[in-house]
Length: 210
Image (cartoon, rainbow, N blue to C red):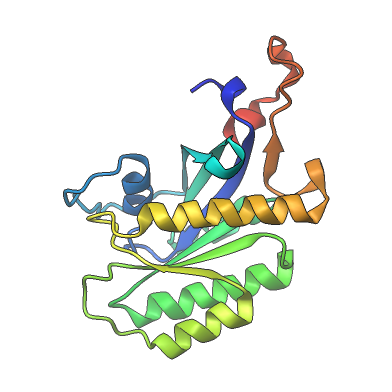
């Protein structure tokens, strides 16, 4: 789809420990399948970028999600800080069968809220919900309440709730953007100005990415 058919670009960063299924989650969103896909066991090195285009049917808008898939390896922590700035949302992923991944992602959420405030949305994803659940629902609910998160339990292998999670996040960003009155100053949102459809020099390279 041409950039000129898109109304908004939302910059989103996905974070979480290694092997929580972050990349598989994005792949399932981008290439949905009712058949189980193969889980990737090679961890992301640094950061990868993908885009997914969704419709906002209520207002007939086309929204592109620019998704930064960040490594969960701590050796990349210093370079990943830049991908947490000026985002419309973060997607915080943990694995149902691993308590440590939940504890670590909660620390990241706490840091993110303290540093960047309440405007960016947070989507908390409990991935691998087909495995034995070792995470207390009360603990999850406390994080949702305390840090104002959206929450979905997903299975990135068969696609369960993956689209619903990101579509809900997209809707939440859009409604927060409209109600904020910040316009182009809203973090992580690029408004595609359709008054200049023929002048490609109007757009910077970051508009195409973010």
